[in-house]
Image (cartoon, rainbow, N blue to C red; front, side, top):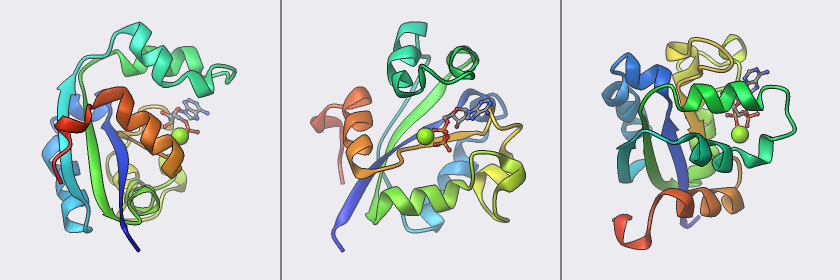
Length: 140
Ligand code: ADP
Ligand code: MG
């Protein structure tokens, strides 16, 4: 299968606890390559736009507030089947349901403050990557 790209975000609960390196090591150990990365503090408007797909969900407001509560690290991960592979490495949304050895099982604080975001389809990955990065910034 061809190499694929996916968008990952290390969320504010994880940057606050200085976990960027530990989380990046999980991706690298499990065969994904970090081909773009930047640390930024999202504005309310940016967070609202990024999570627009969830705007009807009960947790939308709270989620946007959480995502602007500290810096995030946006990154592009590359590898075989990267979208699905990253979802496996991340674990379930709710850390209580996440498999042993996943990022969320080991690091998440709650269903909201769950340490990482990962695209859920190739289509969304393309949209989410374009939200944060230009083609020039992605170096495989
Ligand atoms: P995932 O990040 O696993 O793809 P979703 O796309 O369903 O999960 O939700 C986006 C983000 O919204 C989650 O990662 C989490 O931070 C937050 N979230 C999801 N469900 C809830 C919930 N029931 N209560 C609070 N926050 C939630
Ligand atoms: Mg999602």
